[in-house]
Image 1: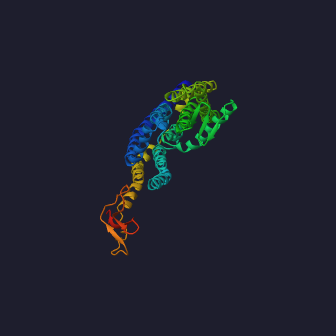
Image 2 (image 1 turned 180 degrees about the vertical axis):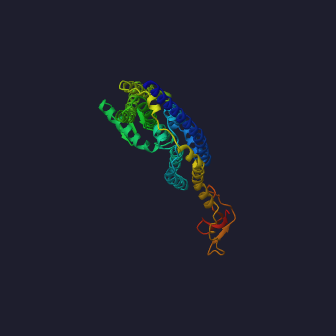
Image 3 (image 1 turned 90 degrees about the horizontal axis):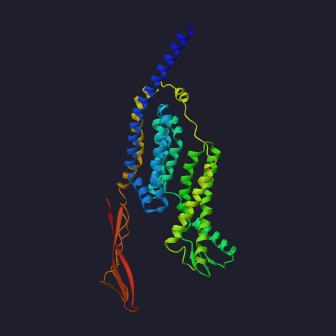
Length: 409
């Protein structure tokens, strides 16, 4: 008597789970094109900022690692596909408020020509696209991947002067403790075997940024507790700084003991990277001893996911409107810049050379050197016709300029 009833309940539960899975799949099929369209549109609108970021990646060895950040982010999201499949995208309209603040910050950064601010704003705008169109549950699931995208922003070079000073302090102190007399002046110092200086490549900023990036990824993949993750990230922050100090000291000692035959020229950089690679490898090997395996996502957790009812249907009615609102908001600062560029400017008052000269002063017809500063899309231009006025008695030259104003509009 009991077995048929249990079979019927199990059958109904199985049908409900199948319907829920179909509803989630349908919701994802509607949401993913919206996310792709929004991201592509934002990148097109802010293409100048994106191109500036990639240009820095290409020309600066300090930020070359940023080329692998987007693929890593895509892989981190892909490995969460099972958890994401158990969630239902639910757009969140209030995310438009922080997006408004972000586009305003981008506008301020563009007007002030602060590239770091505009690039941070662009990455933040891309990250906010996920909670706006997919919801907070999906955002929590891939939160680390979204935050890891900020490693693509080329930041950190402002630390270079301080790190160069620390490297010089440690190197000079270590040399004196080793019994080598040192005369120091700023970032340059002299020892009996030759002259040395701490330059930008010796600051260790490359090692620091690379170590923190890789260390953060390692901590996320190998630890589950927040305490261990934070501890390893702090270690990956401190180890490259101390390792760079030791690297500089070892290089100077190698040059000193070998009569400057070793650790000079290209060997300087090779020894530095080899030493850094060995230190980072040891750090990861030690950190792996306390790794925590990631818990398996069992079928029970998949089955216990909330069943979408009318959420997908209601979202479909206005989700495309939300995409349109996001793109309109993203385009707003560009419209503001267009209005500023095309606004009529007040013409500058014209200036002329004096019509009469006193005493022994006379006009010279010889042309003077011209100079034109380069400005992007100026509202007005001031062009000068320069004449040399020669003092006959004193044998000197007086320069005066006739200024003509031209409006760019």
